[in-house]
Image (cartoon, rainbow, N blue to C red; front, side, top):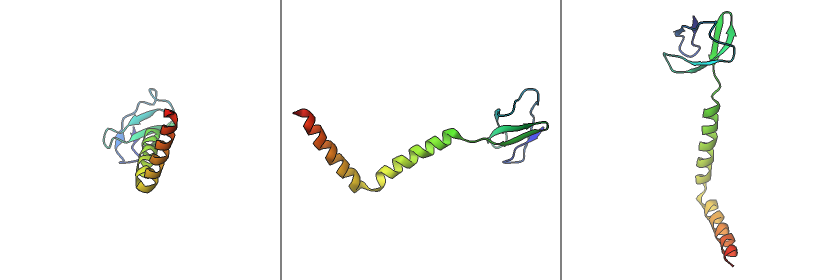
Length: 87
């Protein structure tokens, strides 16, 4: 048995079926957990690489819309560049 570090729920884990670094999900709270120790089984909250990428994308999208004046200037520059291609 192992304990979820997030909600303290008892999680049944067979120490022969997991390796250090394996990830599992807590059936109680749904947290992504990583096996950090084998004897006894120790779990820690797994790093969320996917969530980090999503945050970066969200920050970029939010950052682009914060200052509409700069965005308009960029569009004007793009229009000028487009006109040059037409010649």
